[in-house]
Image (cartoon, rainbow, N blue to C red; front, top):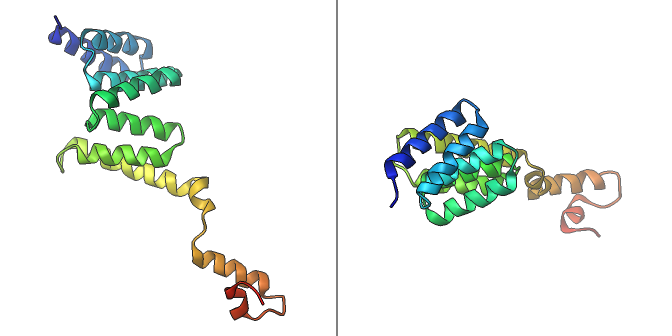
Length: 164
């Protein structure tokens, strides 16, 4: 039988350890919470955060995947998955997770504020990313086409059309 009170105590203790950056103790407590209540997606999501903080990214990926499987539309699994993706440099995927997290909570709550702020961080990171900047808008391509042809005998209209 699952001892949900013991699981909650382990979970709360794990969060306390995690907030004080006692990573090894956080992992131990969160693993105990997951062992006593294996269907708790939030405990697995925070375990993933602790594992990532301990530089165990493969284990963190597995824990967050299991949390997302357990609660596909849940706030904590998607918020933690977004944080993990953002730290791994995948801002586009992080943005998707933060959007799901934001939609999972009531507007105006502390959780909605956290998800919204995380979404903004992901969008800023995405805007600064190389992949995002590699795709130039059409007006910028036209500008470069004009500046490249300004020294040649090709008329501007021909340059915009693709040449003579």
